[in-house]
Amino acid sequence: MILTPENRIKDYTEKGWWGSDTLYSLFIKACNESGPNEALVDAPNRKEFTSGNPQRLTFDEVNVEVDRYASIFYDLGLRKDDKVILQLPNIVELAILYIALSKAGIIISPVPIQYGKYELSKIIEDIEPKGYIGISEFNSKDFASVTKEAFSNEHVLISIGKSEVYHLGGGTLPLSGYKWYLNFRNSLILLTKNLPQKYLFRILLTRLILDFVASIRFLLKLQIIPIISIVRSHFFFFINFTSPTILTNFFEEI
Image (cartoon, rainbow, N blue to C red; front, top):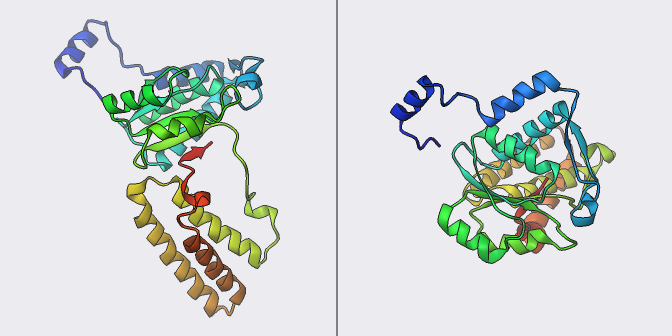
């Protein structure tokens, strides 16, 4: 979002007062010059106030994380000129997210970690953000559960921190009907939990159609077990569609 008139930008640039560098371009320049050198260091007592071990990252490692987060933001529907509230303590992810959001062209509205539901509600009213990025745990409290109460289903909510793993990658299980069931079931659950509401039903319908096509393919190959697994996964999903397991976690934990 560019709020300054073009003639003023041109005038200031010609006079040498302004340049064309951005936060992201300066970061890339630093990575090219100092890639293997240390760039970010967590406080040694990080675990005393939030989750995660203290990290020491080089410029190259930070660059990888920046690309990862920028991809996640895009997958979650965040686009150039969208506004996002950023509320994190002083950890390495704070600097990484500033750069990743800058790369994506997303406007950052940073707020102090001390702000709660009341202050966030006022900020939401003033700036009408598309999303929010916070911390899952702070000072031994479930920070994400408290702050999410200020937001609606229309917002993209992201929490940084430790999350419980319910199903590891498909490669951890032998090929079986249970593995087929978990893959199809978890795909539906992840879509429901993570997609913005305005995209949810269109993409979910597409997913169900593709599952039906897969069932036809298995049937033509006389593979009955995968078909039963798909039916089981759909049955579980629709029976539990409104359950807390699927719907109440508004945060994408990364």
